[in-house]
Image (cartoon, rainbow, N blue to C red; front, side, top):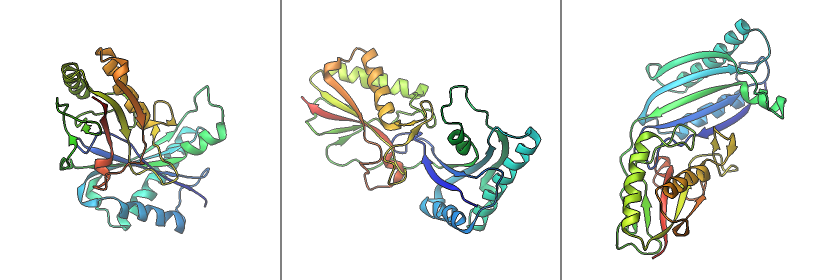
Length: 271
């Protein structure tokens, strides 16, 4: 059986200050649910690549494309989910942390789909949602701060520590709005600071520098999150002339672990 392997890490927080969630997707061919040796090895490789000591829970959801009867598709999607569950347990994952195993049946096509074949191939899948315990905040290095200050210089970086987004999305959570309002007040106070808003993601495959934004279905998650912060600050009357935004995808890792590479930063460009 031929199957496409993909790992998609959805940015749920910046710098590990909230629960992290990794989504691992396995794509199946039509009417298939078994793993061949190569794809089984890919599942094992995925497990070895994550920090299993911090796993809080795992949820496994199976899907099919839109063809066929509902009863058959529910069973097929359940079989796909159980195949992945069994492989994960075989690879050392404890059964008790797998809290959900569910076949969700078929995914209907949207009316405006251009490539039906491609859409169906992406719907024949199992999603493994791995939730991790909260990671400690990183130790800040010289020139890196967790708030806006009056004595900053060009090149200084500000982690937006509590800027949280909806899973795989560029939409802000309510807590993020409160934090950004605080940042906006400081930026009004220190009017000399010009800055670039930088969005970062982690752990996408090496040939894919950017993660998918579930709202647009395009690989533009880091730039969309940076743009969201930019638009918020505009609404708070931070002058457009003081700021710009850019998405860096996974190209600027910190070398401290994946949880620290999921972040949004302000980088001072002019004072």
